[in-house]
Every structure is written in C-alpha cells, then in structure tokens.
Image (cartoon, rainbow, N blue to C red; front, top):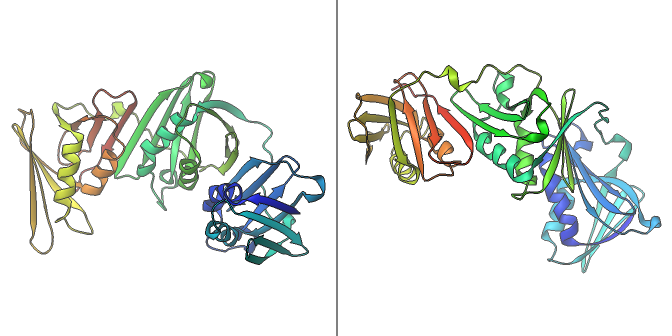
Length: 369
C-alpha cells in the first residue's frame, strides 16, 4: 500500500474514529485502526467490540497503490495532528512496517495482520428508516446528559428509542433525572420497535452528526443498530434489557407551577452553587407566594441565598435539589422561559419549555434535606 495525501484529508477520518479505539488494551489489535485504500476511497475503521465506526473520503488511487493495513490509531493520529497544516503525507507499507514521511519528518510504525482485526458480521434482516441529521442530533443532545454510566440496572446505561407508527420517543434516565423527547417521523409510519442504544455509541454520534437537513439511514437488526451517513457508518450492539414504563401520564397533576426566565434561573443556580457542598451539590428551594428562594450551604457553615420574584399564590413548599442536575437540564433548553411543576418534597420536579417547537420534558428527582 502506498498513499500520498494532504494532512487534513487523513486527519479528518482518523479524528472521527479515534474515540472508538480501545483504551484498556485488552487486545493489542483493538488499539489499531484498519486503513483500507481502494481505487475510489480511503476508509478508516476502529472498533472496541461494542461499537464499530468507519469513516471514508473519496480518492482517486492507482491500482498498484491500493491495500489494507492496521496500525496504532493514537500514534498515527498524533503524528498527523502535529504535522504542519496542508502538508503532504506519504504512507508506504513494507512488510510489517508503515513508513510515514512528510517534509523533514519520518516515522516507522509497527503493523498487525489485517485478519486479526475484528469486524461485525453483515446483518441480513434489517428494519430501516431515514431521519434528518439535525433532528437526530437534537434528540441525542436533549437526552444524553441523563443516560447513566455503569449503573447495575443495565437499561439505564443507554437511551431508549421507542418507535411506534410514525412517532419516535427518546427516553433517558439515571434514576435521578429523566429526559423524554418526542418527534414525528413519516418514514417510521409502519415500524414498531423498542431498542436501547448504549451511551458510548451516543457519544460518537454527537461527534459525527452535523446540524443540517441532510438525511441519514438508521437500520436495526437483531441486537445491532447501524447509522449510516454520506461518509460514515456506525454499528453498535444494543443493550439487551427491558426499559420500564416512562409515560408522562404516570406523574400526578399539580397546581404548583412557576414560570421562570431560564437564563435568570440558571445564573442564580450558578451563584448559589459556589457555596454548596462540593460533593453533594445540594440546595434548598423554597416556594412561597410571589417568591422563589434558593439556599445552599456547606460544611464550613458558609451560605448563599438567591431570590427570584414569581407569580405564585399557592402553599409554601421546601424541596432539595442537586444543583448540577438542574443545570444539566437548563443547558439543553432552547426557549427563553420554562415552567416548573412541583408537587411535594418527595416527588420529582417537571421542567418544560414555554413556547418551544420541540416536544421535550424533564424530571429531576428531589434531594433529601
């Protein structure tokens, strides 16, 4: 294999797949990327046995220069990243060594046999639909923060996609907060399925997706999901578990509703958080007629208090919250105003946008005072 390429053309696919490269080094081959040069394209693939990600760019390569190798993903990425912009990089594989040359720099990297590189098998039976990249990106961003990590309840370590006859619902929860995003999609009109996508796959999707109206194809086959764009294909194993009922109707109605400017609320939370317990990040929210009060204190007996005037004439209520959980929700809000529905000190708060174009709501569970 021989290849002469502009630095940026090689760096883009490398940086797109490097997040999948195995970090724990359980198998030496998983630290490598598969570089496949054909007559029409360069394709670079990485896998950690749970996720497989390929990224391609079009090329015009003479037949005698095509070939396939595996080489350390992090080393070749670091080499490309540190070379000067727009420099020409020459790759040549001789025996078990990949030679990299550019201007006054040269490197020799060890390779491993391509037949040791694990590849997911082709899935013959798939259920497929299309979706705009911007829509899928919004869906992931609105829910990602609430997905658990290393939770003993395996289903919480992924995002539930509940697809039923033209409607897609995305649900994430770590048992402390929940996000539910609902959208219509005509291409799923005759599809009915529920799958749980692991968090590490969502991490890679956020890096790959762009905020435009181009479409991608999503296919589901047995215990896999395949997301295919113009220049990438992400294949991921699904979490084999059953997600509990998530319906908003399970939450009891309440007349304790307050409307807030989300920026004002966010800034107040940040200020109060300065003197909150560094580990617990807790605060007390006090609701009383025409006033919302936030109080935080720490083990050094320091205290912070913020007050916001509100339109509220209901009963007095005190409820504890983790400040970080509330800020995570506010970071995804797209409207100027929000409405918070409260019930009691033992029931989660519902946070929704006012006048938004998307159907999304959040639940943040209370913190015991």
